[in-house]
Length: 180
Ligand code: ZN
Image (tube, rainbow, N blue to C red; front, side, top):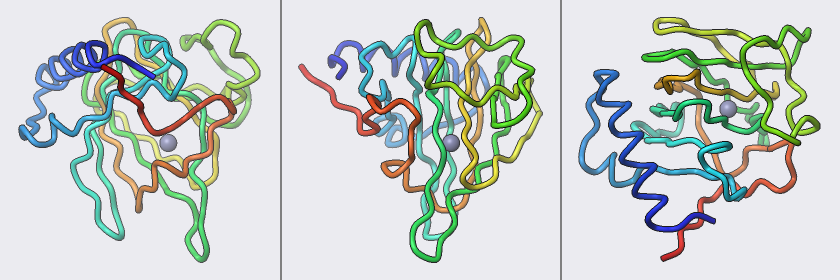
């Protein structure tokens, strides 16, 4: 749960990062921006600001803005029926962006949030900068974190069903709850 004033503040900071990255969002896209705290109540530590630009039956496109050091918790994209889970490609637009996926542990720059070691099992780190692209195959656990200046990325993927993403931390609630 976050408060309305936290929501407004996170949105304002994210909008500034996105603007500085040279990305144009419409008023409507800004108004609908998700300021996700993942139900953990500490959005500056574990959180992400996510603007949905495209959602069709086949593809989705998001702009994700992370504040300095902010972390999107580890998750994977579930399949449903005949559909494999979402394939997601990240392209960095601004800032340093540390993407960690399952694989050999080479964690160097990204910092697991304090006390959360067991919920951050993917330790193969890619230190990405603007222009870098990486595709995360369906079903592979991943998490990411911004460097000290924040980061802005595109997430381009097959059909997104964000509410069904499977998070390693059982305390995560994907739908953001905002209180007055
Ligand atoms: Zn993902």
